[in-house]
Length: 56
Image (cartoon, rainbow, N blue to C red; front, side, top):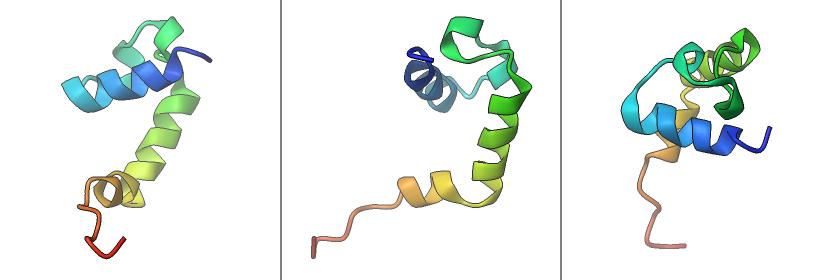
C-alpha cells in the first residue's frame, strides 16, 4: 500500500498502464485499474490539472 502514491506518479508521468507496474507500486491489480478508470471517466484528473484561481 505504501508504494501506491509513487505508482500514481509513475502512471501519470509516463502514461503506462496500471497492470504494467510492479505489484509494490500498486500494479497488476484490476481493482486499482478500475478505480483509476472510473476517476478518469468522472473527469477527476482534468480537474486536478486545472490552474488554481488567483482569488484563493
